[in-house]
Length: 255
Image (cartoon, rainbow, N blue to C red):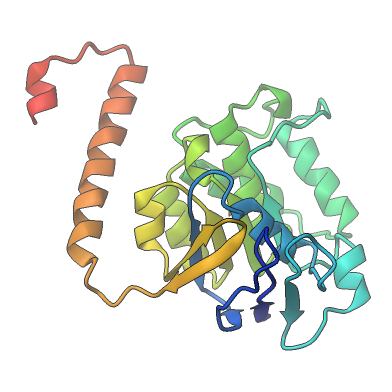
């Protein structure tokens, strides 16, 4: 169980950030929002590398209130953070099963059912079935992102996951958020998606390379979230019908 603390740095012009130290505790979900180029990816990159004032932002990241042990920074097998970026192409021509088995060997894990559990969880996040014999290089963006999230939860057992624009992968975002909350995983989303933002416990608003505000919903957005959830479900339904070759008419649109 780890608590990550983010200490303020400065914006692109050298002006100090004014937010209070941010604490990310087990099970927390935080959405990072702001326009393109506002510093969202730099924020999660600071966390991933455990910045100690040595990045462009000047921020410092603490683990359980102190600088992290060296092995947490240098050894991927010890790092409590999994970063899943928008770029998910795998160069190795392996099957899904071989890819996950390689990860198990790298972590010296011998539990034999973890591959099946990882594939099963990945299939909860995507409408495109993933099988152990599928080639990694043939997976779609949504399948790959779903597999990497499941891998981070099951095999890496990472207590903290950083997800960069999960909505662009075409996966079931609400299922991902619900799953991560149930497992007690702390997760930070870089997102432009209203649903992801509204489902998160807190929102960090970025601008000019700095944190401009930290918002904690007080329940006043409940009706908005309900409506956005309904809209998202409707759009998902239309997406699946279009994928199946259906021609939609004005009755569908009116509904």
